[in-house]
Length: 109
Image: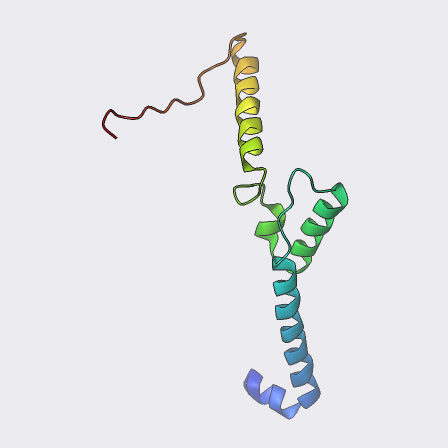
């Protein structure tokens, strides 16, 4: 007996599965529509954002620390660069700022 045959023989079970599936789709869409937290977001909003994304199974979004899509992207990049520079100084007993990256543009480009 297949799963479909079991569901057809038990209409209440069929409707329970169908409603649960539809509710999951609606809740997932609603939670996915929440804007990502920014640096101005309250701690309460950040908690709810992570909690709701965890509940609907969107664990990657709940745990994601990337902020490329958010308005505070530049501030986060600068903070990360400073953190790496501080770590480098601490590990190497250096008192000057290290060169993290340099970008040069070729002539004529």
